[in-house]
Image (cartoon, rainbow, N blue to C red; front, side):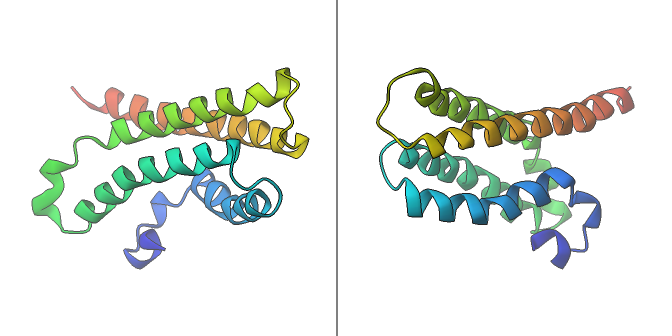
Length: 135
């Protein structure tokens, strides 16, 4: 929504649309079928990461004068990748142990793997290109 309101259509990527549109379904399934327990950590970590993401977006809409404070965008992507890897490790526990948690929760692992792949691709495309442009 922020990108559309700011007419930054180039920032609307497949990763962004995929992740945010699937979160509606994922959270509904988690709240309905696996509330609390292992699922709580995922929401907590995601909320923590989004504090930094929305701080960045908030600063970015303040205009060109604030651009000098936005040098840390690359590190937000690294933070998100770290979050996805941590969640993948966390959810994989259920795959390899005799855990009483719902087997449906295992699908989160496979979803997170897709986010890792898409985010890595985004990182490489965005920051390798930036590195190639710089003198």
